Each structure stands twice: as structure tokens, then as C-alpha cells.
Amino acid sequence: MDSAALDILRTTFGHPGFRGEQARIIDCVTRGGDALVLMPTGGGKSLCYQLPALLRQGCGIVVSPLIALMQDQVDALRQLGVRAAFLNSTLDAATAREVEDALLDGQLDLLYVAPERLLTPRCMALLDRAKIALFAIDEAHCVSQWGHDFRREYRELTVLHERWPQVPRIALTATADAPTRAEIAERLALEDAQQFVSSFDRPNIRYRVVLKDGSGQRGLLELIASHPDDSGIVYAFSRKRVESIAVQLAQAGIKALPYHAGMSADVRAANQRRFLQEDGVVMVATIAFGMGIDKPDVRFVAHVDLPKSIEGYYQETGRAGRDGEPAEAWLSYGLGDVVNLRQLIALSDAGDERKQLELRKLDALLGFCESTQCRRQALLGWFGESHPGACGNCDNCLNPPERWDATQAARKALSCVYRSGQRFGAGHVIDILRGVESEKVQRFGHDQLSTWAIGADMDVKQWSSVFRQLVALGMLEADSERHNALRLTGAATPVLKGERTLWMRMDPPRASRSRARGRAAAPVSALSSEAGLRFAALREWRAEMAREQDVPAYVIFHDATLRTLADMAPSGLHELAAVPGIGSSKLERYGDAVLQLLQQAHTDVV
Figure 1 (cartoon, rainbow, N blue to C red):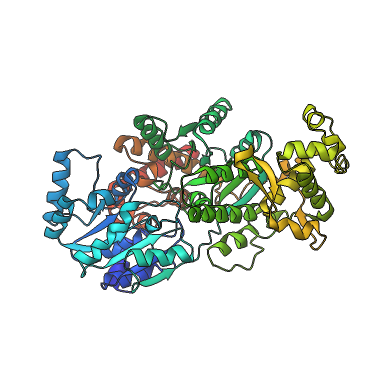
Figure 2: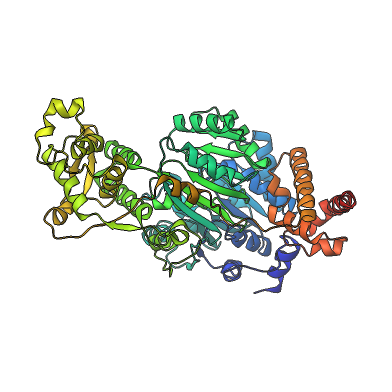
């Protein structure tokens, strides 16, 4: 690795050394090579193009689909003394011209551009006149029509190679299985690029999956209570759910804000700004609160409804713990989620091939939820990465679930679905099995069926678990055109014929589930009482600086940097410069203020 790269890493970015594949990637691109980079969220992808842009002649052009994130990225770079700007639809004509002039005058190190803007004749002509160091294509999975964030404009980015063949390109993503990776390389003409695939493992994240308890709010409240004063994200399926949950959390005294596409742009932007600038805000959102989140100190991500795919789940949970400190990914789901998502897929305008792919991805996520194996092992396996299991940081490893021989119960359930005509939902079929003389049972004469009351020895919760897992195993499916009536699939035949033994996950009793919920992720690095007071003072000072400059708090300093400052309590600029995250620009800008604050905090304690 060139010593110039290490020097910039330390003096500009304030990092003592490279992580993982960063050094090799940076060396490849700096020398003029193309690269396709797969690296988990929080793994340091941005540095892989930012640093080569500073080492090469010209300006690095970063193609990003995230207009909302560009401002924060540019703010963060400017704090480091890097000459950065963006071009997107939020700029007025005069400001856009100033950015264009700065590019042509060689006054920019990095320029962020939305793909729609990049592909305009005006922007292409501008780049023809500029000295370009490299092209970085961020969120490269957007090129895949089978991906979860497909952007049509990304398909046209081959023009970068065709028009400027001498300029190196680096495509980066945090979420791509092997087929998507191959598609990225093909669609962006990067077949000959060097590929760098880092581990998808996020060992600092604790994964937990729980069953819905009615509305699911109690479990969510317990989760948030285990993260006092922490920032978090709660993902919900619909706008209505987002609004409802945000209100309930606010009524419980939690600083919660809603975010969804149905809100006005101004309110959405204001809520996102508060989330980024303040500590302890919980954002309740649909997936419209998407990729444009660069906040490093999100301590938990909760899904109160089932996501659509493992890729979406991985990307959304990946917004937790980007700073490497302990964080938690919590998912609550039930049979209703499965039925709703299958219905949405069936009723969509997508072609049959697309629908089948989405169903397979949903089935894979269901398998992950119902699995008794290590969550990390199951999750990484989807991305083609092996893991030995026993990670010690997921619910299945910490509290191994019990299994039971559910073969006879499954045969009863499947037989009852068949004998009642495959026309009814799980609730009615369970009434038949348990011998409940409901009005509906009487009306259809189902108390005369041979399966009437053959499952009276099990309660509603046990039968609900059986039906949920039969759907997850693909032996039953919900017919969206017949009010989600359950019907058998070919996979049910071996069980009905007695040719297959079926073991199922045993749902824990409610009291046990409550205790499990109370076990939060390992605490963020503990501080002494004196260091804790210094940390609180530093956060308050950081919040004031963020408000004055109208930037996210983490742009000033990450929590990890503040924690190190509070723990070390440096007394001079030389000691301060040794703290990770403090480069020369931040040392000059904030050094004296930080030292004065630490000295005052020490005086207050004494």
C-alpha cells in the first residue's frame, strides 16, 4: 500500500489503519483498475472511492440514487477538509452553476450526482470538459431488475465505460447474492473488473425473531426500554401502521417520529433531520425510509411486520450498529404477515417469473424466521457465505428453541383443510379441529366432518403455530382470490401419506418469551461514572454544534470517538490527535473546544 494512502487515511480521516479489503481495493482503483465491491453496511465502502479520488488527479464522480443522503455525505467530507459538492434537483440554478464552475476549475475532490442528473446531455457535456479521477457507482444492486431497489437509470450507466474508457470505475453494494452480483457485472460492463467480496457478517448485531403478541406493541416497548436514550428505527408494513405505532410510542413517552411516502416532503425532511441531528430519536417508518441513512449510532432496528425478502431484511437491519458497537435487530411476525405478503405478490402487475421469484424470496425469509439453527448461519447462507454457527449473539444460540414431533398434528391440520373444501382460513379450520360450535361451523355443517374435534387436545395458540409453520414449509398456501382460504400443495402429500416425519419449532410460553425479550444486546462499551459524565457533556456539546451548523450530529464526531475521548480524557492537542476519528481538519476546528470541555468536566467532578 502506497504510504500516501496511509498518510491521507490518518491525517484526513483520522483512522489508524485500513480494515479488511480496503487497502487492496484502494490500491486497485488508485492504479486505474476497475473494481466490484461487496461489503456489508458499516464496513467502510465509502473510503474505497473517497481515498482514491484524493490520490488521483481530478475529481471523483459518485453516482448515488440517494438525494437525501448526498447533503449529509458532503457535510461529513467538508468537516474533514475534503472539497466535496453535489448536483441534484434540490439546488437552484445559480448554486448548480457554482458547483459546475468549481468542477471545471479543479476545485473539487468529490462530486455526488444522481443517476437521472448524470445522464442528461448537460451533465455529460460538463464531464467531457472536466478532469475525472474515477467513477464510483454506489448502491450498485439498483441495476438488478430482480433486486429490491431496482432503478431503471442504472441500466444506462454503461455509458461511463463507453464514453470515458480510460477512467476507472468502482461499483459498490452491501446487498447482493451471487446471481445479483453476476448481473451487476454484466449490466455495468464490469466483467473484467477485480471483485472484492467481504464477509457479510455483522458480528456486532444481535438477531432476534419473536411471534406477534396481538398488536405487537408490548414486545416493541420492551425492546425500546432496553435501549434507553438510544436511536432506533422501527419498520412497519403500511403507512397506517406507521402512524399508529408512532402515536402509541409517543404516548408511552418515547421520542418517536413517523416517516412514509404519504407525508408531505417538508414534514418527512424535518423528521429525518431530527433523527439525524438529535440523540435518542426513534423513527417509525415504511421502507420509504430507505437507503439514505448514514447514521452510525443506530442501536436497534425493529420490524413489527415481516419484510419481503432476506435481502431487504439484511439491508434494513444493517442500518444498526454501523459504528461497530453492539446493536440489535428485532423482528416480530405472524401468520397474517405471510398471508398479506403472498396476497400482495399474487395481485401485483408483475409477470409470472417475477412473482415466482418474489415468492421464493419470501419463502426463504419464512424459513429464516422458523429456523432453529443459528440465525447468523442461516442469514449468511443466503448470500453464499458459510458460517460454523453457534455465534453466541442471536436468539437461537442464546436460548435454543425446543422442537416437537408434529407429524400427527400436521396430518390432522392438512386433512381438515382438505375435508372442509379448501375454502376457509386458519381460524375456521382451527374451530373445526377443536370442536368449537361457532355459527360458521353450524352453517356449513362442519361439525359432521370426520375431522370434527380431533384436535381438541391442543389450544388455539398451538394450532396457530402448526398452521403458521405449515405455510412456512410450503405445505399450505393462502388463496388470495378466496379471502385467503388455505389450500394444500404438493409438498403436503408425503406427510398425509405417512411417508414423512415432521418436526416443528415449539413456540415458547408467553412468560418465557417475555424474559427472552428482556435480554438486550450486549451493552455499548461501558464507561466509568466519571467518563460517563464526560461522555454526556460531549454529546450535549456535539448536539449544539450540529444545530449551529445544521448538520447531523455524527458528522461532528461519531459516538465511538466521543466515548474514546471520555475514557482517555486527553489533556493536549497531541493526545487528542491520536484519537481515532480525529483528523487534522477536525483537530484544528474542534480541538481547543473539546479540551476545554474535558477540563471543565474534570473540574465539575472534582
